[in-house]
Image (cartoon, rainbow over all chains, first blue to last red; front, side):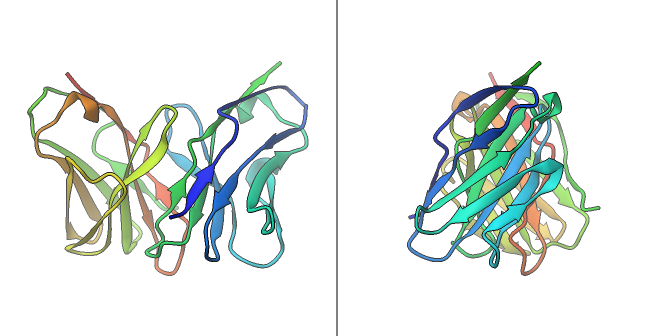
Length: 113
Length: 112
């Protein structure tokens, strides 16, 4: 069975600093990988996705992620964060058919001035 | 824009009540999903449906059932609500041949 591990439950960071949110997955088959963001009191919104092709994927709001097959990782990065990036971030993997996703437990990004 | 709506943002029910959570999408999506979200546990899949009247169990189906009589509507049913079903419930849908899920705003259910 596939699983997704987000190693950090919370990541505090100062505004304009770079950030990396880590995600590792386990799956014996090819996967599709996603990062979703959830702002307070809202549903989830797709940040970026990796389906195939270039391993460096760019998303909305200046975020990017790199797929590393050998390390089974899909870490999310942003070179300079804003207060408005404060949210919970979920990594997800799809390999079960019917577009089902398995989510990690989430990482809360806390940006302070 | 894709729109996924859920019938209530907040709901308070008593133990033993039958609870219906409704989800409607307006983009003719085939696949629809129900998740529950709990702090520290992320999102866990309860049920999903890939067509009208078709349903599949997810990872935590116990205590829940679903109904999909029309393509645009997917209902989650708690036959007899219990306090351990207090949670945030999120509905999502995907268009054909896509893995991108579109989420509704969620229903925060409290069972007392």
